[in-house]
Image 1 (tube, one colour):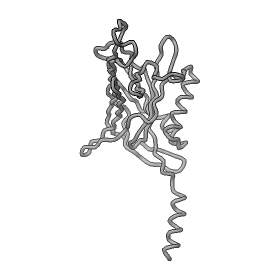
Image 2 (cartoon, rainbow, N blue to C red; image 1 turned 180 degrees about the horizontal axis):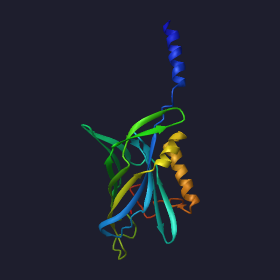
Image 3 (cartoon, rainbow, N blue to C red; image 1 turned 30 degrees about the horizontal axis):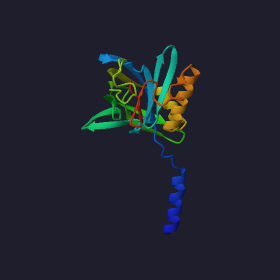
Image 4 (cartoon, rainbow, N blue to C red; image 1 turned 135 degrees about the horizontal axis):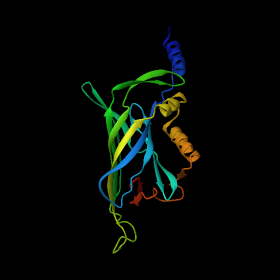
Length: 223
């Protein structure tokens, strides 16, 4: 067989192979304030979508204020990865947003003690999975970049923390992989789901994240 013929066969086989799209994991987020705080209101819940075997994800956070349910979407925010030490595996969710006046950090970790079967349109595979991650969300913002900060007697500065629980959403994960969605496409599905349940886009027509902090040209999901 000539090298040209062999190359043609390999090319055709490649065209029949499953698409090299990352399989996604969807986690539901829950926040519960903890410890001392000032002028701090935690987000209540949310979703995090990222490649199951690790990579950059996107975040949707939910909050109800004044009887209005709002969601806030942050694309390409943070990372999900698997850390390994010997035969121990941990799934880690980490994300930090910072500018000259504020810092917000999300961190959660859990045992990757289950092998989960993923089914797409083209193939099946198994990956290590953590059903639940536990951690914290921490925010601090001096708000000194705001025009009224100098000499103001108003409430100024934000600091606080919340327990963060990320729970694997098996239904959404199965659906998004079965349909071979991208992270962006799954975020759109979640936004549609929330709007159908009365949520409005908290970032629509605003420069900041519904109480988030804008400083140094960067919008951060702090509370």
